[in-house]
Image (tube, rainbow, N blue to C red; front, side, top):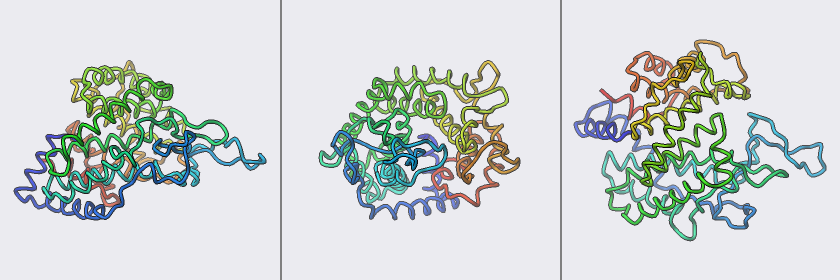
Length: 372
């Protein structure tokens, strides 16, 4: 989240701008729903990780299935794009996503209204996941996206902690409230520093850093975000500069991201990768690194990729690659509004308005549609 935008929205709210007031009232309704939310924790899962320690995050690979040709179904076999419902028996991934959504919503509600009840609830949720000895997550992902019969974890699982980037924003919003203390901030910062060290130096972290597709993009988003949050600006800038190499390899001269198109849900994965690049470019701005207009040897960059993808994502053109599950246009909505703001081009707003009726993106609208 961009601090200058937040300040501008708050000023409009304080002077009772009608559109802004309406959006913040919607935000408050969403935040109110979270006031009764039971704090979530890695301790809630009913399955023990291989370590035997429930404080260790654990998840199962989503696209691997029981092999009925084998007596015990093992090892599981891959069906790309077909999500195995078994994965939801392990609650860590779902609960981390819920924590992200709840704390960002509550944090924004506190920031705009000053109502301490929102900060108090968000603080309780964060302490439960990160700080309380009985319930906190250990800062590593050794058991992310394990495949039954093959392994207990993979670097690929690291994409699941993208939710931690949103939680960084939520934590920042809470600073200044009575409910979130300096020691809380320091405790969460220390947790992120340990996780960042694991991401940069563990085998699985290095595996994910080497990923060439969206996994590599989102790895970069995380390590840059966490380096900024923990105060290592030099490391953050180095990593932001290195991310240019991914634009060099991922985006073709026409804007196609071929590694995403090779998947069975090419439209969804292309949209997901672009969201990662927009987050990456936003973070890089903080470090004096311009990814918005950077282009590779084929004169292509993230805007080239967006312009190629948009007609398909909004339904102007029929999709000509694989997409075996229904595509949700929400996946491109926030990217379009961010593009309109960054590139000062109203065509992206026009595209977003074509799908506006189908989305409920209060936070996106607050940050990008209320700007003058």
